[in-house]
Length: 362
Ligand SMILES: [Zn+2]
Image 1 (cartoon, rainbow, N blue to C red):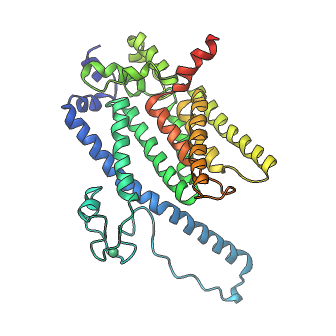
Image 2 (image 1 turned 30 degrees about the vertical axis):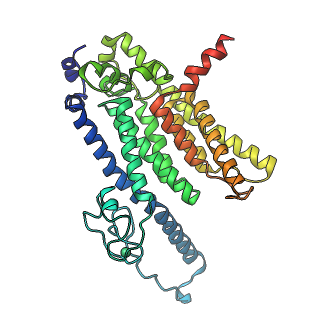
């Protein structure tokens, strides 16, 4: 299978010309793209919780006004609130209000040039901003390493960015916004509809190897559902040219994965409530695991639950031992679910690949 017939075959053309660039240049642009998106993600992490809080306040006030107030009460219309969303107001120092110049807004560089301080008043800028930008860059490089010049890389990067935002917001506010978890769920289901041209699917990435794109081959031997699909494509590339498929797993697996992911944590929640009389996890956690089930199929759920539970208890035990949290304080579970999703995207279903042969071999 030479590159040209793939080029003609489907929408992979643009990706293939990108894959033909010198490797260092590919990595450079992928990293740069990650940085720019990372810069946007810092805005989402900072502003989305504030936007949610404002929306709740406004709703409550409207409710109160509708139920309790009669015209005679003289409820004065509130002063119009300044617009606040992901676009406006422009980035500024929370201390002195200094609006950032374009060069101060440069991802990572702006922070490094100003040595982590506001140029106007010298207030320290939180390390969260450069950390998220650097992490997003690393995630872009990682997903490009795993999937190559390919639509599934872009979809996977979208998932990783959303997971990073969710992890940060949950760690800070104990909330996983529906505004992110629910679109993630629909995106997972839609991406796994068997309608995408073969050049879009993860499987095709392995076929691009000859054209000088990424080499995810080693990991494919260990990956579960995704690698299985890739193997089928490789065995019959002729069928791969005409058949259409989902990006990450077969649609039935995705639908069952979404329902089972939600249902499993729902059961844990109610079990916890009945036994201990309190809430161990939140509804946002159900929705996030449902979304991850939709992306990777039900087969990946055991691995993701295991990673999240291990990560959560490990950090929880350490935090308890150091007296950082009270015993009854709930720990955010979202960051560990997000980590589990990222591991599954980048490395496949390792649990099934490595453990299943042992179990079935006995
Ligand atoms: Zn300032």
